[in-house]
Amino acid sequence: MHKEYGPVVRIAPNELAFVDARAWRDIMGGGASDLPKWHVVLYLFPYESSLANGNPCRREGMYGVPAFLPPHLQNTTNKEHHRTLRKALAPGFSDASLRAQESVVAEYIHLFIRRLKEKSKKGPLNLELWYRYVVFDIICELAVGESFKCLESDDLHPWIQAMVDGGKAVSFLTAINMYGPLTTAINAMIRRPAAAMMRLHNGMVKPLMEKRLEAGDRPDLINPLIRLHGGKASPLVCNASTIVGAGAETSASTLMAVTSLLIDSPEKLERLTEEVRSAFQSESQITAEAVSRLPFLVACLDESLRLFPQTGSPSLRVADRDTVISDVPVPKNTVVGIWTYAMYRDPTLWTDPNEFHPERFLGDPKYSNDVREAFKPFFTGSRDCIGKNLALLEMRLILAHMVFNFDMSRTDDPNSKDWVSKQKNAYIIWEKTPLPVQLTPVR
Image (cartoon, rainbow, N blue to C red; front, top):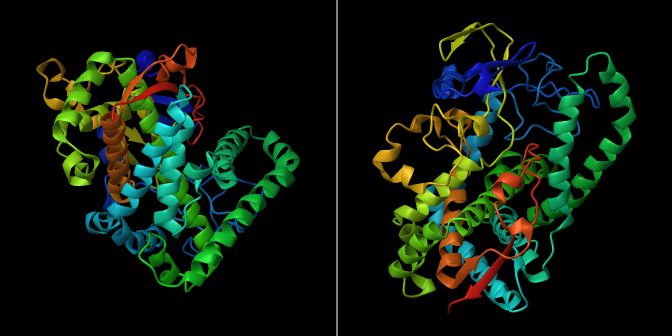
């Protein structure tokens, strides 16, 4: 649509879609200029209104607070409450904290590599699963002090699938609530199954949180929230799900994308292989600090984030006042969003927008006209991704270890070729297809 109608498109009676780089500043610029998140229309359940400055939550939009699901870092629309949660969590995601936890991350990556070496003897491996195994084990260990042992069991914990299904359900529920008079009838039909799914999810997570509370004080990501909420399990369930879900599926998606793009571009893979294997003589040398100094590896991940954004939907906001976004007057109560997939492939912003060229992030003059200000894979402003540093640490380390230990190539399976372009179902997170890859250990 943007190719035909331009950088600002009205996609609903009160909704505007933007692919203009200036929209980042105008919508999510930070401080007072931040537009508030849009509430989700979920008539299925009563709403919690105690955090909405004494006023009931508006029954509209994409983010909301069902009474059985206390507000958490991602869905709360109250700026002060978000600020409190973020302030409590921020120390755990700082560079210093992550350096202290790097040994934990390394332990799981080493297990990941060992398991891949064992399994690769039997033929190609589905990295769509294995990348999820390793990132979920890492983030669960860091968040709640206990991994799901996905790497050991070769299986995904049911909670993981429940989170994926939940994201898909929210996408459908949001769409349903755009059908006007039909909304009430449709919601009545799905009220019970939706509530049952949420009870199932909470039933899996709450015992983990209760076990974590019994463990007492420990240096994990959830510890500051335990102090903040006075040891209550219910608020921890929601925030733990957010940290684990947002922190794992997104990083796994990027690792799948970069692997696919590299095996589809042998000359790029060869260049990355040379960079990694010439930088390190042993796995013990592969540290977060060391991989951050590998420019082509960093550029490969950036280019993968451009071609395959971590989420398939925008972070929608609502204009709480008459305002101007990208020089376009926007009336109060208009819903606005930046659609990154369209923005990152816009030919007016990028040279060869649909092609994998990490060189564009390394100063190649061919790409000097790229509008780099448009590229914000972790968003911006006061609600940018709190887990950015952890995500980059994980992805850089895992990719470096993969290239150091294996020669990677496509298989005869059609799913192995051009994987990124075959991903079509973008809900809140991508619903991904298998990624079969031939791994040949080199050491």
